[in-house]
Image 1 (cartoon, one colour):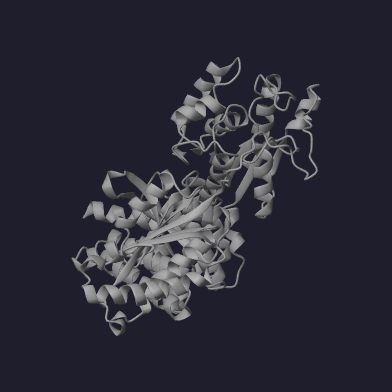
Image 2 (cartoon, one colour; image 1 turned 135 degrees about the vertical axis):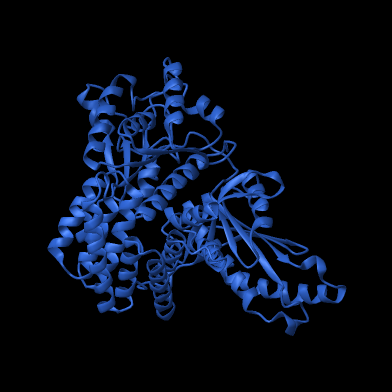
Length: 567
C-alpha cells in the first residue's frame, strides 16, 4: 500500500494527474482511507479542476476535492486535511463552512506550535492559509513570513503552499502576486554560450586568456538573477564556466548533450593545449549534475541540426520545470553580439529565444575582449546578413515530429471485416489527413500500422488528438466493424525521417494504452519550447519500452484547457 501511495504522490507531483487519481481511487475502494491516501486523492481532484475546460466539470472536481478532504479530516482530525477542505469549500462558494474549518485549523496549529520545538513549516503555512480564507490579511502576512523563513530551499513545499494561496486570493479578487513576496520560488535559467577558441580559429572570439573575466561576469549575472535551477550543455568554455558557477551555488543542474558523450568530448570539450584540463572539468560537472540527457545517440554531420535540436530540448526542459514550479524562465547567453559560424551556435540560440518572446540576459563577450585589450571577433557578413556557413551539402536536415499508430484488434478481424477496415476505418483517417496536408511531409501505412512525418510538433500533436477522437467517437458497428476498434498513438520529436528516433517511436507504440497519445520527452520539451497551447503534455513516468529498448521518460498528450478557463 505504501508503495502505491508513493506512486500516486510522485505521479501527482509530476503532472500525471489522471493516472494518480486512478491509483488513489483504487486504494480508497480497497478501504485504504488513511489521511495520507485521501489527502493525495483530494489533491488530484483539485489538479483536475485546475485543468478542466468545462466550467461544470471544474466545479464537480472541486466539490469532489472538498468532500475527499472533508472525509480525511473526519476520520483523522488532522489539520492538514482540514485546511485543504476549507480551501476547497471556499472555491465552491461555501464561505461559512470554509471559515469555520479555518478557525478549527487555527486552534489546532497554534497548539501544535506551542507543544513542539523544531520545524513547524506546515503549521505556519496552514495558519497563513486559514487567515487568507477568513480575509485576515495582517495575520496572513505574519504567518506566511514565518513559514517562508522555515521553508527556505524546500521548493516543492513552497510551491504547494503558494498554489493554494493564489487560489484563495483569486477567489477574493485580490492580486495573486501578493503571496510571492513571502513564498518566493527562484527562477529557472537556460544557458548557451561560445566555446573557447580552437587553436586553428582565424579570428579570435573567446581567447583563452579572458576565461577568468568571462567566468567572473557569468557569476555576477547569476548573483543578480539568483536562479536555483539550471539547464545547459557542457562544451569547453562558456558552458562549463556556467555549470561550475551554478553547482557552486548548490543549484539543481540538468545537462543536455547533443550526441553521445565520447563524440561530444572529442568535438567540443578536449580541444587545444588545455584539452586534459577541460576534460577533467567536464567529468566533474557531469558527476555533480542532477541529470544528464543525451539528445541523440549519434551526431548528424550535416549542418548544425544536432545542436539546434539540443538547444530546443534545453529550452523546452527548462520551460517544463519553470511551469511545474510556476516561476520565471530566464535565458542567459555568453555571446559576442555577432552572427555565428553556423546554425546551432550562440547567435542562433539567442535569435530563437527572442523569436519566442524571451528577453535573454547577455554576457557581452566582445566587450570583455575589448576591455582585456583583445580585438573582438567580427565575422564577415554575406549579403543575406549571416555569417558564411562552414559546410555545404545538397542533403537537407531539419527537426520534425514522427507519429506511429496501430489499430487495436486488427489481427482478430475476419476477411469480410478487413475490406470494411480499409474502406471505412483507413478512409476516415485519410479524410482527416487532408485537413493537415500542409504540414504532413510523409505518410505510409502497412496493414493496421500508420506512419506520419509532420513539419512541427504542434501539428503532430493536434493530428494525433483529432485521430483518437475520430476513432473513439465513431460507431464502427455501422460500418460492420467491431465496436472496440481503436488506436494506440505515440509521438516523438525527431530530426530526420529515419534513425534512432524512429526506432524509439516504434518501441513506444506497443506500450501506449489504446485510445491515448503518448509522447517522448523530446516531443514534450519541443512543444513547451515553442509555446504550443493547443495541447498539454503530462508526465507519465519512467516507462519501459517494448522489445527491451530501455526505460524512458514518457508523456501523455491531452487537450489543453480552454483559454480563460481558470478557477
